[in-house]
Amino acid sequence: MPTEPHAPIRGRALLALRACAAHPQGLRHEAYPTYIPMLAEMGLVEERHVRGPGRSQPAWFLTAAGRTVIAELGPNEARD
Image 1 (cartoon, rainbow, N blue to C red):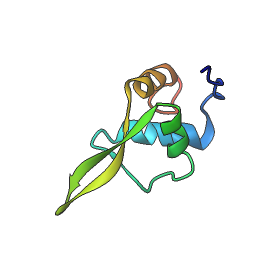
Image 2 (image 1 turned 60 degrees about the horizontal axis):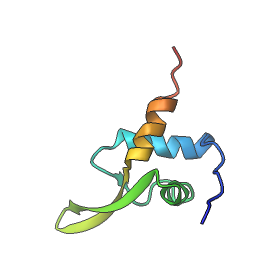
Image 3 (image 1 turned 90 degrees about the vertical axis):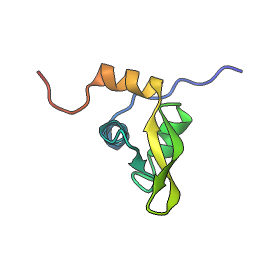
Image 4 (image 1 turned 45 degrees about the horizontal axis):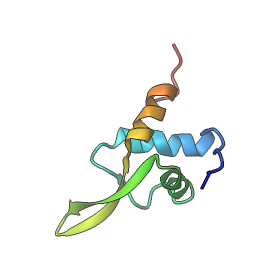
């Protein structure tokens, strides 16, 4: 089944993706509740469980596709 192309990532969604890239040990699950689920639907981030103090907690991690997007857009807003 064909999928619709997604709009380019920008604004707070881009900030959320960059925040996920900046936290290789996992971005806390409550961060960017509006944007991270959309990025997960696009296949750019995934939810995995990490060991926390005395329990396992969900966190967001970049996928290979997410790392590709970050490589194209840059890890931060600084322009050369």
